[in-house]
Image 1 (cartoon, rainbow, N blue to C red):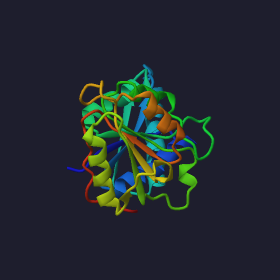
Image 2 (cartoon, rainbow, N blue to C red):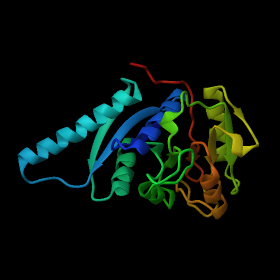
Image 3 (cartoon, rainbow, N blue to C red):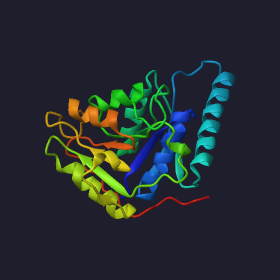
Length: 230
């Protein structure tokens, strides 16, 4: 079965970066869902209908920007964006959640936004992070894949190899010139949990390319592309 990627989306520039990374992951075989978290519902039916319609329209615009008809749209209600995405990921059996960087991040750099940080600190699913301004790159692609694993978890190298096969890329030892970096969770993490060492966090901070952080012991088996252009 194709890996399932949830893209956290509310139409910010950082989310446009997440869409660009979503296209790369889809080219590697992932199926994509755009997810928007509403933080409250309204008791007044007319207001509730209006806000639900606005949320749906926002996701439709995101799908148009993504450039594919093969995308699911999901709206979830939660007081916390992180908790809402975790719940949706469980309900949808998602393999990873995709984010852009924090809005204050300099172009070309990578800094997890607050919700991404929640999932990176004990979350139950892999996290993919796009650098700021990634969607402005003319043709974001992946020719070189780096791996950082200071825990001996084979999931990172396995996933990198599957990505390389799918994208016709190569695994490189020079992580600082990679087009995508795959990072393993720390040894102390429970299986299926994301948790990073200080060295891994520094690798993410220094990265100038998208990063895929895996849950401990859970590789992602990328294979045949499924994205259909509109």
